[in-house]
Amino acid sequence: MSPAVAAGAGLYLHIPFCSAVCPYCDFAVLPTAAASSRRYVRALIGELAMLAEEELAFDTIYFGGGTPSALAAADLEAVLKAARGRLASAEDAWLAMEVNPEDVSPAALDGWRELGVSMLSLGVQSFQEEELRFLGRRHSPAEGERAVREALEAGFDVVSADLIFGLPGQEPGRLLDSIRKLVELDPQHISCYQLTVHEGTPFHRRRLQGRLLELGESRQGELYELVHTELSSAGYSAYEVSNFAKTKAGRSRHNQKYWDHTPYLGAGLAAHSFSGRRRWWNEPGFEEYCGRVEGGERPLAGSEELSDAELALEAVMLGLRRSAGLDLERLRTVYGVNLLERNAALIERYVEDGVAVADGRLRLTSRGFAVADAVARSLDLGLD
Ligand code: SF4
Image (cartoon, rainbow, N blue to C red; front, side):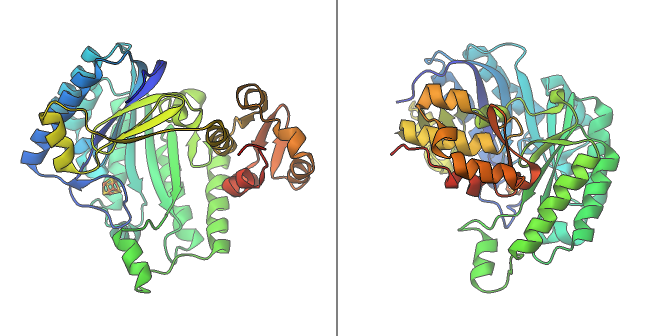
C-alpha cells in the first residue's frame, strides 16, 4: 500500500498523550494513563518493526504529539532504538522533540540530551496567566519562562518556543508583552500560530453557543503584523509564515521537508506519510491502532494518489508560505506550469502592491505572507 520513501526522508513519531486535552486542540490526543502508554509504546515499536520491510533512509526524526515529554526518556529511547535499528536511517539523524513546559526539569533535560535531541520545541503559547488558563494549558507564565531558560542552559543546538496569538479579545499590548518576554529569553527559534477554532473541539462548541467570539479580521491582521515586525526587529527572520529563526542552523530541518514536498514517513496513531506522489495514514483510534499492530497488521487507515494538478497546487501553496518562495523553474519542469506567463498581469499587480517579489522565484513579502493562501488560490495553474 505504501511505496518506498526515498533517501533523505523525515521520520515522524507520534506520541498521543497529554495530561489534559486543551479545548482548541484537534490533534490525535488522549489523556495520559500509565497502562495505555505502556501498550502504545509496544505498539509503536511493533509498527516500526513492520516498516523495516520498506527501503527507507531518513535523516531527520521528529517526536510530535500530543506530548512526547509525557513519556519517560527510557520509553522514548526504546522507540528511537527501534526506529534507528530497523530502518536504514543515518545514525546521526537530526532529532527534534516537542515538550510541554511543565515536564521540563534538570533530570528530564539530561535524559533528552542523552537521547541526542538537537531541537527542543517548547509549547509556551503565552506569558499571560489569563491567556494560558483560557487555552487550558497546565503551566504558569513563570513555568514557561523557567522551561525556556533551563532548556537554553542545557545546551541543545536549537531551543524553540511556540506562541499562539489571535485569542478572543486579545489586545496588541498583551501579545507584545509575550513576544518581548520570549525575545528577552533569546531562543534560537520561535513559532507563532494564529488560534484556529477547529470543528469538533470544545472551542468550536462554545462558538456555536455564542460563548466564544473570534477576533475580527482587522484585529487579526494587526496582531499578525505585530508578530512579524517585532520578531524581525529582534533579528528573527520568518523563513515560513509561522516560523522564525535567528540563523539558518536554527531552522527546523524536519519541518522544511513538509514544505518542499520531501518524502516523510509517519509512525504512530493517525500519523501521515508521503512518498512524493502518494499519501497514506494510520488508524486514528487508540484501540484500532494498537489492536491491529498486536494482530501483526500494519495499522493503515487510508491512502490517496495525488494528481499532478493537486501536487502543483500544493507546491504553490507551500512555496508561497516560505521566505525562499516558489521555485518557478521547478514548477515548469516538474508540472509543466508556467506560472509567470499564465498570470503575468496578476503577478505584476502583486509586485506593484508590495505583496510579492518576482526574481526567478516568486516570493511573498511579509505583507504578502498575511494573505499567502489567498494569493496561492488566485493564481491560475492551468491544470485540471
Ligand atoms: S498540549 Fe498540545 S497536543 Fe496536547 S492537548 Fe494541548 S494542544 Fe493538544
